[in-house]
Length: 398
View 1: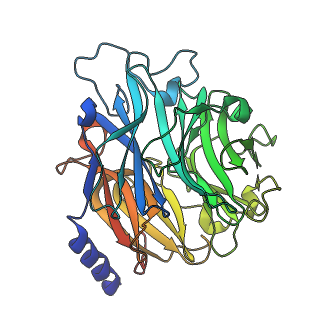
View 2: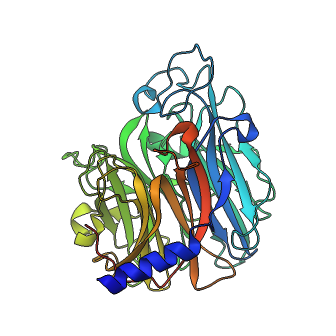
């Protein structure tokens, strides 16, 4: 145990100053930056990190001298009007070509001063036959009534004007993807997203594409009220997908708005053939996939690399939003025996990604406090990027 603590503290000491600030209050004239989402573009040696730039009230963000009503997407997404009316949230990104050591200037993906865009979710795609590559980004708009997709054919240098996916997604339209990114399965060429809290369906949905994102269909999720009468998934929200490296099965991990463990469902078909629609079933999920959560119910991210699965989350001993932690499983999310605390201070949302040059490390974009603040919320929150080793030491969560 002493050896474990020493290894963790030694790593933390060596890397305490390695955080690269990507977004901070009043960048681009916006007081708040939230919800990082990272994606690796291995064909170009590039990493992209997306985020919401917020000029809005609510969720810890306050516009100086604001007179409009408080904006809270969690409670107003059922309204006919845009819940950001009077304020706005836009989607921005940066990229790095050296594993996060240096970064581009901030670029806007989408939005105006009347837009309410949330939850950017990028994914990398490579055609199994032609090896053509692209980067796709989806997000929710107008308070969970629209789902949009943007595509880049030049590794994120530029993106197209965007496509509205509502007609393709049906009851899944407007779902807020992630947070974190989509999933690409190289063996079958399938793309997948999980999302929640659309105006037309408050539960969790999974949608997939077998043609590189040109068309999308809804998967079946046992427990979702539209597919199963038991409605067992109605209390879940933010969701993420990962392809388990040993079995090839796809795991759906879902946040519960309480300190209860995250819920999970497993698809055992979507990895094997692009002709079989995925079916997610909670009863098939490994027991270890009910990942630990905190009283704040924060969203974490999942990433598979080599034969391991990694899970990032603010996992404070006192159940608050602090202690950004990465856990590692070597048995397809059945047990989590290794890990480390990346940052001991206030922290919140995060996203893991592979690096494109250093094969022994991973990257993590996460929210943390600015200038030793007591919390990571609103203007006290910045988004940073750092690297961690793939080979994590033994870890025991208390």
